[in-house]
Length: 416
Image (cartoon, rainbow, N blue to C red; front, side, top):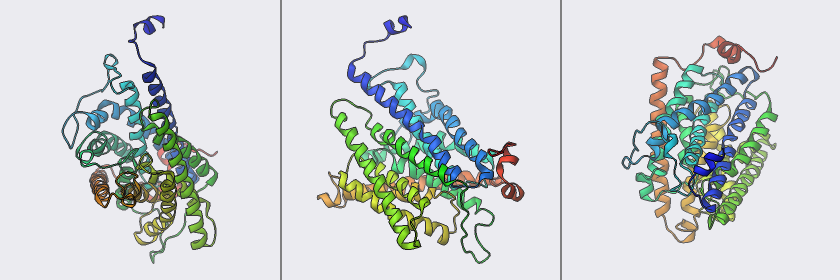
């Protein structure tokens, strides 16, 4: 141990602080994985809980390996404006440096947990009827190809970055990518048995444990303080104040989303629905992720309030009009509100926003980014699921779906 410490290059205090902060943020974002798992498990039926927990576990495990192996290079490699390079196994032990103000290894870890987040969002949209083998194949492809390529367009310095597109921590880059792929999958796999009547009327299929769902939302809310402030990538100098502001805007938007969803549900359905209020908090978090560093605290609250209202109507529209069965509301939360929050940067940004004298230029750039990344994610997801449906198969047999994926797919049950 002493030999290692003595051989290490001299590292300044600022770099040490930035590195520790980014690692802490990484661990907080990783803790969002059990948050997603609990939300999905609580909002679905008990007979599928082991399957859902297994999918969330494999999202992170498979994503960690594939993103390290090549996904990171595709996203951040030199390449060109549309794709990075294809260097295998980024950051071998001898390659660590601190050129960006923190360790290369730390950056790889931070970006890995973001990639895993994009993958796990799809799980909720296709819950309770997807073959586990098909899900494993998809989880690999999204962290290997789909997420890294569109990520290169933005955070990798690609064409959207050059255009001036703003998505600070990933409303569109992370959350909407997962949601639009999930939409493609949910459309192709079809609704759960019993979700719609012969006349096409949607029927509620209640989750088995809303307590688990609520705990998951609180864990996600906590983890978002690593997700958004961590994306500052530093904690010294001007970043000391910046991460505090980002934490504030993140919290205000989440609170606004929860309150607005509660009030909207109360007016529309005559009762303050807990499930919609929980998703309202997540909607506020997703919506502010793009502009958390670019808007004022007041604007952050307004964005959250807007997202909370939109969330309620989006869930209803997707469920009843589009007839897309999304058991946990992932498409509404991460897709609709992710796109909405990204667009609202062009309205509320303190520099260049519409209401602050910037005109429509930034709003137009935001719209281009939302459409381009949304089209890429939905299109590649649709192709992927079409291939899986024609080869491996996407959906479990009806007896498996009716009796539960836990026993048939995994040979075990969570509740005994």
